[in-house]
Structures are given as structure tokens and as C-alpha cells.
Length: 198
Image 1 (tube, one colour):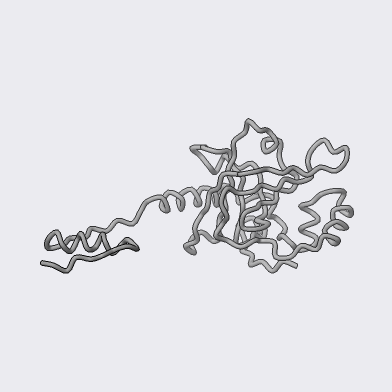
Image 2 (cartoon, one colour):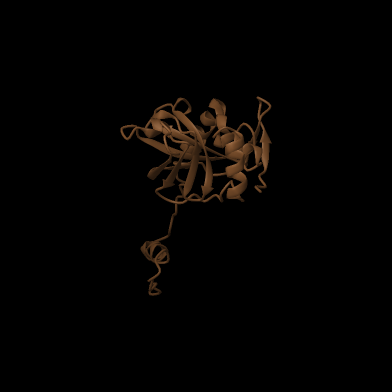
């Protein structure tokens, strides 16, 4: 069973300390680009119960955004390209029951699902008429409310955090002559042979 830290939101829902948003790629307003919520199944795979039609269309380019909450805690917002999308259907299903999105690179964050008892999840899916979100919630593998996604305020804040993350730290190094600054560069390499001659 999952043990997940949760944070209260303004809507009164409980949200985990990590949310996943699948978004249209390249949007200038990422807070309006949210397509679906997902669950970090492993650091390099996202589970998307009841995926929306846009995720099924190969012409729609999307990316996966992993957002730590609360954002003021200094966590890193991550943005990944999908490497693969596996759709899961049962027999004559028209729409998939779930999608598993493999990320192009692993997240720095651990999975948000820490236990997965397949028999219990299967029984819960059957009891909820095939609704995987409800099954995961009833088995306490994800908190209620996760399926609605992070919300516009969190997505706007995440956009600001990402903008700051892309801005590199800049330091100005001033040396008295050429030898110290060449040695400074040399020391950044694993094959440095510093010059100690005047």
C-alpha cells in the first residue's frame, strides 16, 4: 500500500507531494495545455488511467511534467518527452482503459505508487466497473482528487519555477594574471596538469 505525503489544496482536495501533468508540447501558456493527470509508476514510467482522446492521436505532441508540491519548497519541476506510449484495452473496448507512458529520461523523483497488489487492483477495477482511477483511490494507492490534475494555479506557478530553473547561476571570476585562470579551467577537467611556473 502506498504511503504518500499529501498537501491540502484550496478546493479542499488532498493532493500528493508530486503531481504529473501531461501537456500539449510547445504551448506558450502551459497552464492551459494540461491534457491529463498521471501517476509516476516508476521514475521512468507514468500511468494514465482513462487517457483522453488527445493522448491517443499520434499527431498530437505532448510532454510529461512532474511537479513537486509545494513549489515553494525548492523542488525541481521536470519536463520530459515521451519515448513510448502503451495503450491497454480489454477485449472489445473502444477506448483504452489506461496508457503507460515511458519517459525519454528518468525522473529524479521516486514512484508515487509504492505498492501494487495486482489481485486487489483487479478486484477493485471490477468493483468500479472498469474505472482504474476509482480502483486506485479505493485501494489508497493514490489520494482522491489526483485525477483532476494540478489545477491552473499550480501550473502557472510551475511555469514560473521552470523559467527560473532555466536561468543559470552566473559568477564573475577575476584573476591577477593569465596563470591562475588557466589553472582554474584546468582544475575543472579530470586530466588537469596544473602549471606552477611563474
